[in-house]
View 1 (cartoon, rainbow, N blue to C red):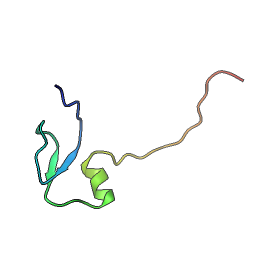
View 2: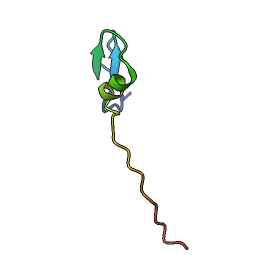
View 3: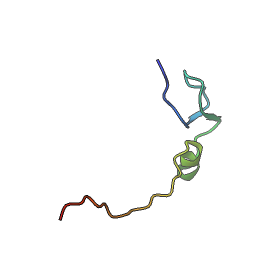
View 4: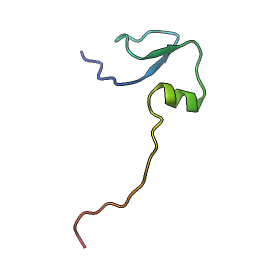
Length: 52
C-alpha cells in the first residue's frame, strides 16, 4: 500500500511508512502547519466561467 504522502510530521513515533519529520513534543498550531508543509499563502480570486 502506497503512503501517498508529500509532507507531514509525527510526534515521538515513526509512522508505518517512515516518512515525514519526527518531533519529540506536540508543536503549537503555526509550527505544526510549517512542519506538515501546510503553511501556504491562500489568495482569493474571482472565478470566471464564461456564463453571464
